[in-house]
Amino acid sequence: MTTNSDVQLIEIPKICDSRGNLSVIEGDTIPFVSKRVYYLYDVPSGGERGGHAHKEQQELLIALSGSFDVVLKDGDATRKVTLNKPNIGLMIPRGIWRELENFSSGSVCLVLASDEFDEEDYIRDYQNFKSFKH
Image 1 (cartoon, rainbow, N blue to C red):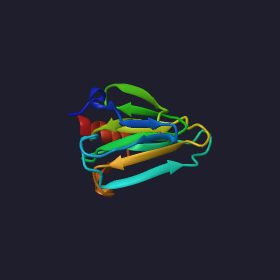
Image 2 (cartoon, rainbow, N blue to C red):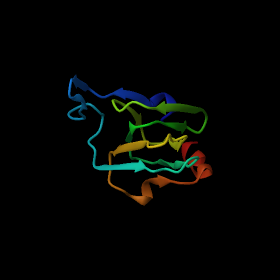
Image 3 (tube, one colour):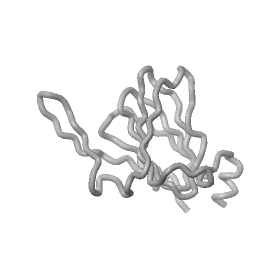
Image 4 (cartoon, rainbow, N blue to C red):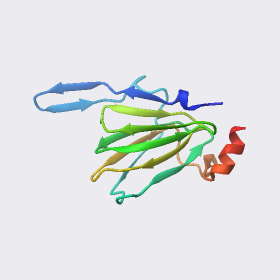
């Protein structure tokens, strides 16, 4: 079973020049082929997102703009990671509960997912998640 130690920060290659920076995700930059891309924005002050885990899907979260906190739970331990750089992604493997909070004004969270949307893959109740983990 996965634990919070399986969650990792991934540095996305950054090309810098006088015109601005460019980051690219291709090849083996991330450990899965992205089949779905979505982004969160205009989250109201004090708003939260997430509040679920996936049975199989993996995700990479990136703060394209601004910052937010990701609270990670593996059924035993809790870990909080602040994302605030567009060239750093948070790789969340399957079986990890995630909650997104503390969004700064103008923040944008990009998510690359290993699979297309499938409601059956979601665990949306924390007690059901704990049962799934143990």
